[in-house]
Amino acid sequence: MAGLAERQCVPCKGGVPPLNAAAIEPLLAEIGGGWSVIELHHLEKQYKLKNFVDALELVNRIGAIAEEQNHHPDLALAWGRVKVTIWTHKINGLTESDFIFAAKCDAARAAMSS
Image (tube, rainbow, N blue to C red; front, top):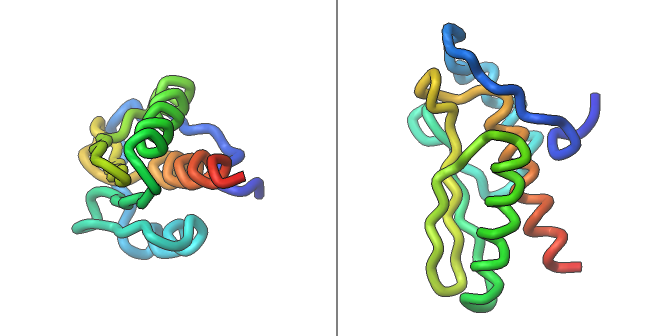
């Protein structure tokens, strides 16, 4: 199976249950550090960057991914920080695509370091 960051988000048409704790656990382990699952409802991570310009660059990178994947997170921008909150609005909970998107966010951040 390809890594989550290489996969594509699948649009949710509704009518499917959100992931339960047993399904979330291995996906959370795969995306790794810094992500938190909040009340089995959404994923959250705060990235720390060295200044506002870098934080804005990350927001723009994540925004471009969101448009490409048609999967749109909540983003909060502050000096040296970007907070990303992800869930599937259609089912008001988490799907595998939320974890795929989280992995893509981490890849976008990693690409800035290189």
